[in-house]
Image (cartoon, rainbow, N blue to C red):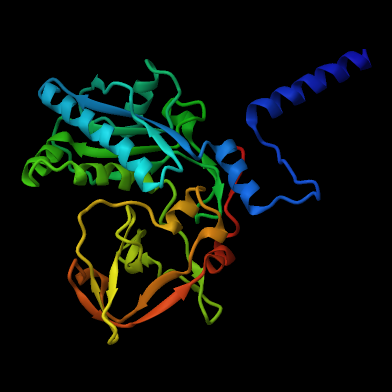
Length: 329
């Protein structure tokens, strides 16, 4: 009997380990180097291959049109391609599944929509991106459903079961009225860039911007983040105009800096790639933040400000947030 119980216990252990992926592979000297941590993090938390579903919610007074569906198809195809480019081909975003058109009356919440979606669809998506056919007064936003990453400025939680998922779903993008994207599309000479930027910008809030750093006086500082919207990088942070904001600056050599012109083709900075688990801390160059009294609120492309360069290391961020680690929940 004891032998049988032992065998059953071993089988249960093997099943748990085999399906969770929650184990550490150490080197011969018993240590885990940075490269191994990044590799395991990608494997355990699926941090290099994501799948996104696109939902279009209609009602009796505002039915979905073929033009709506075709525009979303264009957006999702370009979002997949841009994500690969933005991550330097370190990650992929699968958007191939057909747009799911759902009829729901009233003004359903994203939680109601998600639960309705999973009644008819498999739990295979990391992200849901939702458009509606009717006027919506909400802003675009990203709702964090699950976070199992330590070291990015967020707590650990898993609310996926409240949205009809068994643990796969990590975030939901609310993209508002699809007609708004039609207006942008036509206004900017049929350029799809802004619509794609919006999708990937909201998706990027899964990882940032939430981190602070220890400054030269030993104090915690939130200067990396925009004081008017703390989930975005400050414009005075050199990011190359990435998907979580920040600007790209030209040093004029006289104590002033000018915000460069952008083509709206936004990607990810090294800091973003680190927070996403795609780059090790040793690969992240020191960050450049302009120390200036100029107000971020009034900065735009072409703005010139006075100031000096302040460099911040990834270690100063880790000193606050801790090492970036993926855990099983």
